[in-house]
Image 1: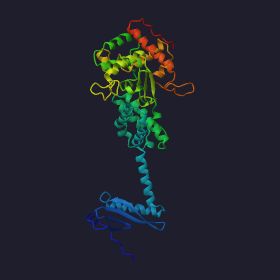
Image 2 (image 1 turned 30 degrees about the vertical axis):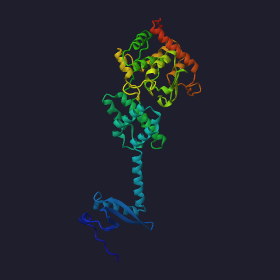
Image 3 (image 1 turned 90 degrees about the vertical axis):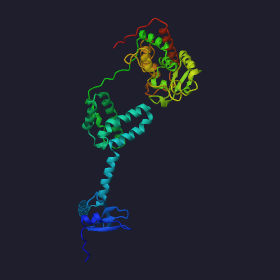
Image 4 (image 1 turned 45 degrees about the vertical axis):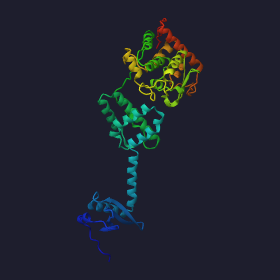
Length: 411
């Protein structure tokens, strides 16, 4: 007759000391405490299933008490009695926990951000991640993405709205929608629950960046720029900005290696463009003249418009706006980005240039009748003529030419 095992006491478990080798303190029913030479006290339980001896690990003492270990042993014995392997149950539970952790909103969102941020501008990538970290992850980050419901997302968005950041709330709803759709595409969610939140937030009307588009007001602006008494590099940047009407970041980060003054072309590589498509800017005679004069000053720098403190860095992103303020144009009147709106409006409504030529030169997503994106050299001849016509027109305004009023288009 097998020897009856005396159950352990809490004091025995507590006072068990390590030896040179592992040893066991049995409690009965297959449960025992495994004491390791390093001092670990690990609960183990042996059982038989399908005539095979198997072992379960219940955790370490004192995190798992003697009473806890006995309860887990009894639960395992019930499973065996019902024809279920408790080892399989434990593996399934562990897999479910791992799946929830690996498929939490934060994990999926960070994976999405890593995958797509290479196609974004650095500033957009940084802003998107910062918004997630500040407003989203603390609230729904740990939740399994497949279990998040619209009310949870809406509650988070309303917290953002309540601090007066309605635009940010709308932007974060858009970001979350992109994350959910990525989760759907990768098999970790059934649907984008943010689709149910349409109309749940008050509408936000985005204001346009300030720009001078009336030819009568453009003329004094250009004359003031020509008379600017500050940095010569910033002055040249302001003079060139209306002639090329690229985005401010594309202008200030321009590199001499991209510019061919003899061919009168500026080739901006895809990685510096918002749409990640290489862009060609035809340079008018006036634009080339500004760049040749500037080349004598910054030609040894990598950048056309280097920072005044170091030629190794481009001009500050606020340099042009700050110069416009010094000239008396406040932020509600004119911005560095406003030169794009100026060109777009006057080229269309005064000079009556074909809209697709203008949109292509603005590096917007222009497509042909078959839905394909135009390449960077599309309509190059026509765009060269347009850019020269535009520069000549601005020269005429500065010289006091008669201003043609903007046409009012019929609805």
